[in-house]
Length: 273
Length: 158
Image 1 (cartoon, helix red, strand yellow):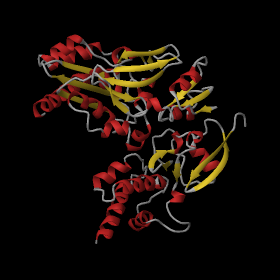
Image 2 (tube, one colour; image 1 turned 180 degrees about the vertical axis):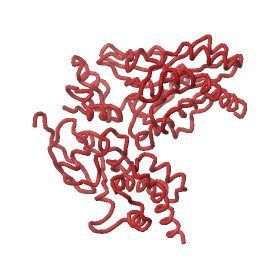
Image 3 (cartoon, chains in turn cyan, brown; image 1 turned 45 degrees about the vertical axis):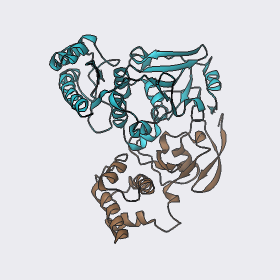
Image 4 (cartoon, helix red, strand yellow; image 1 turned 90 degrees about the vertical axis):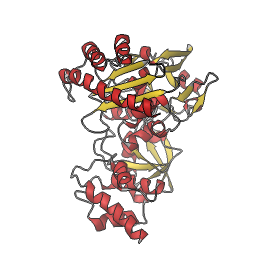
């Protein structure tokens, strides 16, 4: 069965009580997994018509709230993302190819939590919050706490990602770099760097462990301009695997270099804006 | 078929009623139920682009689209790009430029390029390359495809 609810309440109601029923957002990952028989849901709940998940709005405290059904294409082309928030736009532009960016959604991508995906490091770097709605109500989870393990998040079976909250962060810079075998592939390694006014810095490494990697000590070194020290700490703390894209050893070795390049670009962005 | 769904789709400007499996993809419905075989089954994973169709004017992967989820959308396949036995100007330009080797990627390329020209009638070569970056040509015949579009635009500007 494919359900096509029009309201969030109806969608959550359908998900409640059946752990094998899956929500369908843009389909870019879930339908590929269905085709490969990697998942066999009892039914699908299409989120295409759920109004609460569409579009974006600004909250009274100037937090930007992006609906979970926002396509990658829309974020990639969004010109109102400025300063550090450019990191999210850069991540969106790094996803797959134009057609897939027009299908896939930010909510669907982060709910799957592929460690090689592009949004997780960017969202952690921006201290974004993820809005979840389930039968028990609404909760807001920090991105750093949302991603738990390989393909695992804090989402309960009857919960949906409903929005991404980006608090205002002021001026600064945001850069996302991805190393991949071909443009648009999942990352071998990726790095999100955010520089904030007042000298604070944040670096988050993607695809080198079960969840996005960041370290307060590395961020402190980065803020002092000690990029090599920050890179060494992150490479040491990383927990990468060998897979068809690269070896764990290779991933560790590229982390400091990728961080250095992203930091240079972020510093330039900081001075030119 | 258990749990079969009766759906009505708008395909190439015509209403088509069909019975589909609950999670059936648009690609299966087009090819196996409606006999519209222009969209090709390549990877069935959304990677190759051979199954591309236009959904509400934008390129989409038919293999990643659940048919029962497409009921309120306008679907266009290569069969709908021109009248029967005729070629669209883009198709004609592809033939003239020899922009076809094995031909398997061609329908997807036509969809990607048709959407590009609709959105931006005067694309640069970079725009053309970006548009077909969603589609894999295993013969690596990309250059002739870019030339076909560029030649067509040059000819229409002359």
